[in-house]
Length: 213
Image 1 (cartoon, one colour):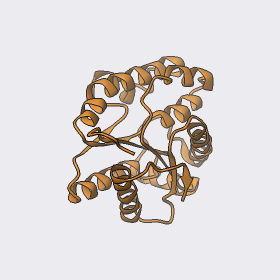
Image 2 (image 1 turned 120 degrees about the vertical axis):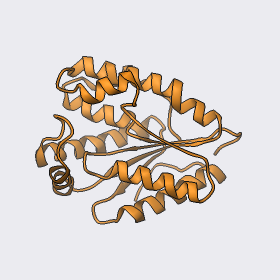
Image 3 (image 1 turned 30 degrees about the vertical axis):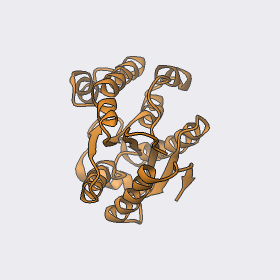
Image 4 (image 1 turned 45 degrees about the vertical axis):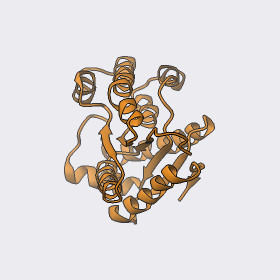
């Protein structure tokens, strides 16, 4: 639980097409309506390093991209996340370490390397993993258009889903408070409403233990 004026750090990860961006936006709105100070952000960040990582996936691959993403993460923490937490904000971040544990592995980088270069990243107060069936997420990606080479149809969506399950287990073993939610048959409004309540509990009461809903 929070013991000072420090804010709460919440991260949202999951396969492409699972609804991370929509959920982040709604949670920010709902928490704001309850009177909380909320800062929504994303990784890769909107800084120079983040833009290079986000738009350079065809140029940078493997260990190079993994290091670029990790460097952006540390800069993002230093310049954006921590200052907002110290100012008492709830920080909601669209993608964090779990995405590296998935996408960089899909890019051929060993798990030991990914773990090592992200070892100093701040632990979130709640690490949310959104999931849905590969057929659902692949259809959503196809409808909106792929953003990068990691979006490769239902087979790619299935691989991402399996790796996010592994990432959730790994984060839990590291002591991260993981909350896994299935968005496939639940509306974004319902997911965001539930998450808003859980995050409010973090501000007012005991920390959330790892669970699956």
